Image (cartoon, rainbow, N blue to C red; front, side, top):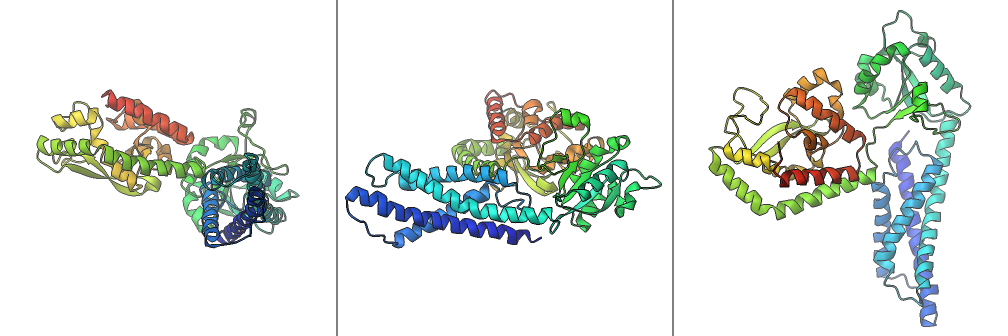
Length: 471
């Protein structure tokens, strides 16, 4: 499967739809709206202004679809869901274009606004959705006929795994799974799944196997006696770009975790990697850029004052840089105003506490009002960090935390932040135990990420800073 070529099909037809809709709408404005206004037949002249507008409109639609995540995961599209998404984004895009480009048009009466809006919306929706429906229907048909499929790994080796495999393979319409083999969870003497599939290794080798076999889907079908391994399996799958599914038990079904995705599909729980819709991630990044620039400008006097006071407080550099681990375990240099005496860690990495003698008098004031964190606005602008996200830690402490709490790795699914729910609840952690306690709030944040939650955390952080309650 060539994903880029398939995505290009959607993009090309979306470009043609945007061009066709705007061209036809331009003709409608000239021949109907303006002709009625002036009482004469207005000539249809596709001048330079029209072509400049055409390029702008096409660019706008493609950018809107791109930021909405439409061109992502293109082989797993639902036609009904696609209909709703197309309606929603065409309505949104048409509204924006109407207020930016059409509202100042020459009109006969206010009814012309309604007819203009509905005409543009109708043309854009029809010309966009018909090709999308055709491409998606053709793709779905090829998947159902087993002409194309996703390399799939079965995690499990006995009754549940065999039953699931036989159900998927025996289905009248394929769900798109092409099994490359199974991995074992317990080292049984005999694997029942071996009669159906190749045994390619134990579950502990999952990261290596997923890469070797270019796996796109992993289905967990373990026995009830193996449920204790599920958390470890999920941790091993977490950083891989694969779709994760698992067979549900009756509790999962009754608690509403199982969602019907296809009439002919097998009932499975899908564990989604997508934390927020693509458009929300885009807005989150735009907010980071805008706010970091605005704060750097507005707080420039405070930044200058803090820098001077840091220089006068004790010998040493104004800024303190330290390597931290960020998104996807990528290291970066975090920047702070120095709040400790120089060479505070000459004896090795140490966490600070409220009564830490290494902290300068000015450093205590900075920490109380979080002034030492202000240079991290530059980290946010550089995209090393976000305003809201789990606090980044050093590799030295990450290794200690993961010995007690392996699920800490979930925090590396998102960019670290200047503030977080864990920081609002706990402030600075003074030991590994507090880091683990703070972590559970950050994991809950990650699993419930939204722009609304980010805004709430920012508001609470501002209140804590304004009241000088920083720990």
